[in-house]
Length: 137
Image (cartoon, rainbow, N blue to C red; front, side, top):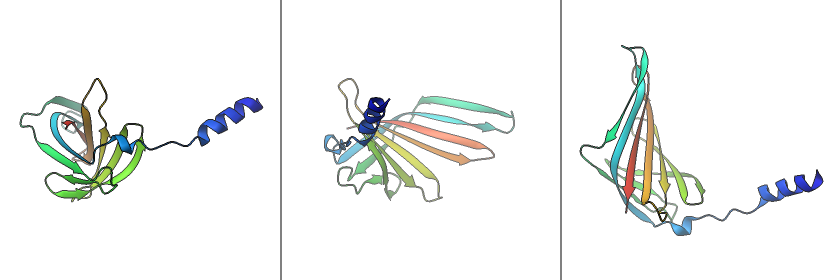
């Protein structure tokens, strides 16, 4: 039992090296798919919709490695880095109306491109969540 406890404590205390060195400082990302999930008061049920973006739009992330990340989209917005784990970084943005939007950046792996996912939730006569999936270069 003592050996097991020491192994668990040792594993928890292992230093985790940040993988930020693998990331680029700037990314240009184009939205390719979106989802909408929300409560529809008229039908009294949750409805969902997903599909390709009809008019692809682009956002840009800059300052990722310098920990001064800024999102260039409809406006220029500073991002707060929430966490980094392996090849993933999580950010948060506070939109002008006060909504918190989370952004997840997945660095390139051999079988897929750099990916960015944003999620935002609102209360429009009931809870609704929007997610956008981007590919980046």
